[in-house]
Length: 436
Image 1 (cartoon, rainbow, N blue to C red):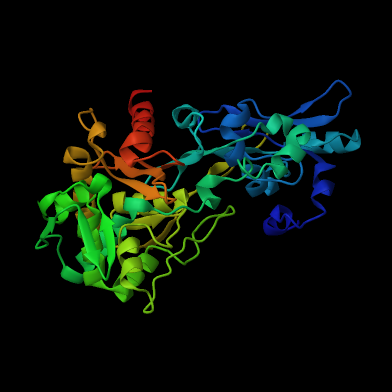
Image 2: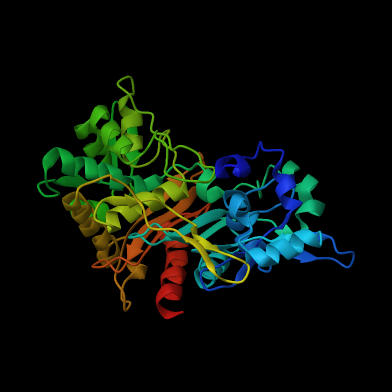
């Protein structure tokens, strides 16, 4: 039998020979809803049907003009048949194809729908996953496309550089993290000092070092702050000072321990996040980097992994979209088990970050997520992207702080502050998870 890695390779030109013997199997959501299936036209020709259209476009992918998403990741399973052997023998004698296996995914239609409609007409991405297992429950990217009409739309889609509709922004998007990076800076502070206590800073709304001035949002003067209030208020001045105190080597070490500049444990295409401070970096860049600006770039999926690890007591789980495989008759072929990748922080460090992130919701920039039947911890971010003050809107966080249930990572391009655009999307996701 051909190896799975060979069959799944996009460079394998022999994939069509498997399709000559097997009708490509279906892809289904965790609740059994069909996300992709093979149907036949009036001439008996096969074609792929995607019942939800644009909603699952990037994560399920397509099987035209190459393969993307789960259509690529699960290609081996979809082109393998475990039908009852007598049925396979009958089909072979009659010159008919066997039915391919069904790919069972972790995707939750309810959460995917909530994320898709909450993101609306904005460009951006949403990732939602279970911290304790790594199962991805929702993955949305916009601008998007309709996989049912991909063949007709292909020329337009590959030429439309302004929207980049074929790009899965969740895994391939590269964005400045904005104030969500203060999670990294705060963790570095804890590692250097052994506590989140003892920090004191008087924020006057701006901070100037070596003729470079950095300001808090709207130049707001936060006054006397400890680390908890500085994190909750997302005080740029305080965290710029922390970054300068910690130094380049320390910040870089902590960032790389969280897999910046490293490979991510993903089975799909992704971009490696970038952290580029070095000993040649000047003070202005150190200040900018400490608050998530500068040259640092990260994907929404990477921020989801970091957030999930914090929720999971410091252990990063391997993110997964495939729960298992059934044959065409619904009988189990295989099941996947949760797999830990590594411990990226100690349980004590994770608990300290949980405390900071809880205060962001209790009294800080994500206050709109408070007052519900469930508790939320998180961090907002506003990543400035041009000289006119436009910014991307970020939120990362998790619900069920005592026993975390759902971790989310959200970016809205040109969405303004995190509380303005990303937080309402998080609210829609959490509400859909708990209230249906």
